[in-house]
Image (cartoon, rainbow, N blue to C red; front, side, top):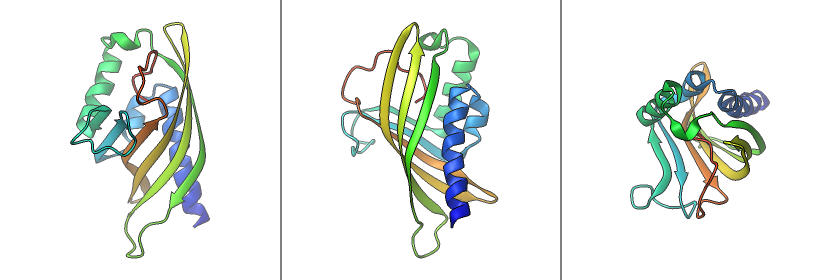
Length: 160
């Protein structure tokens, strides 16, 4: 049990570090083939099929976004944002009694970003649905509940 917690916690920290370091291909490798990356707008508990989201990307959308960032044609990220993510308050909700291969991990994230000479701090509650994919855990869904998700988000990095 302790080993699983440490492995999951390590995955969450690694995901943040890979984003900070711009190692986007390695970041993508942390996600399942059917992954979803979601940033709700206005309310954390909206239905993304019924309401507008800041981001609602499938794995294919994530791959396109990463390709555009790497292409040099992502003008919103020229020059690239410099970021530090701080992950805390890690909680693991155990899988169901039927021995399911997925579980939920909850975190609080503080994102410090310098974008085009503007410094911003974003905070969020993040929810990860993780799937055990032998021999490791992978991210099936990442939901980023920004504290300011109902306000204009100036100087925001492309990927939170």
